[in-house]
Image (tube, rainbow, N blue to C red; front, top):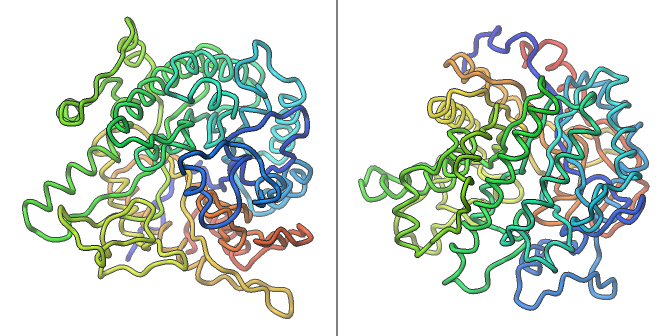
Length: 480
């Protein structure tokens, strides 16, 4: 793939991305309350356990291990980690705030000062090095109390609690944070509502009704947050965040082409349409009719959604999806988190995620062509096994190869005319995998001596990719 060496604009926001529940640890320190991630057991079956009937959302140390409780201890080591990010040349650091550090139960009237003060220290440390924080308000960790007592986002009351939370953040950090996003991978709830919505419908007959009602509540909450942000921090930029996976038809059979189109509309565009265009798309009405979805929409909701549109789209990109209307079991791409069938033209990662850098260029073109708002790739990376050599080095050439091709694809998209704000590689420091609860599924430029069984010294060590990415940033992508 050839790329114009000047395709990354001046001021491009290079950096890395993490989430509070996957790096912080200190899960009960500073008066922090419990959230969904705190009851996630370690291991590949963690999400299946969480979504199983009868799961009581309680911590059971005799039965499970909970890697998120310590994670990589960013809560105590943030200064060390931020210094390493600064050495790489980060312009931005995408992070999230733990809702339960600010409102331990979620429904309090006043925020928790200890939690607010912690993020003050983190933001001050970032600014010391000239790094701008990019903050996700809700990243897969809503307060457990809101799940157990209110039913998660099925409840309209949670909109009020979220408004109180978001407004507290804007008022406290109005001089420290200029880039915000509301909900992480909001559309991911179509596959797995438990982490982002706080429930998992066990009855297929009510699945869509409950999920789309919860979406509506999140859309209203997002619009309220956008309006509050623009009022309190006029020079801020606030965006949505979606999990984008372009859907390819398996072949040229018109039935499969139409199936791929409809799947892409629902998964990739439904939430983005509401966030960016401020209205429900026409295609969703037929879906609602066919699946007996009848939304409870209060007076003023649709006007509020129209008024609270976002400034930009943040997106995660890990893989594409190839699909067909009717598929045999052996055809399925079981490793892909978004499903589909195996694409014969693509290789897969150690965890079965198909690797498709061209798909990132396709994604950016499709999104920008549809919306004409700035885009920001806030997650992209390779989860893989890393080997520490006898001399202590970690030669993660596999990761360098992956990132190089995806960054080249972004450069091509910019040449295509896409307005791209920046790029934050996911898991810039090794962290607990959300989907599997493993440390061995490593993404980082920085190795953390922590293992799946909980052992390790937590020592930080730059990998080969650390020095490679430092050079990419220093040359604004010209030397790949």
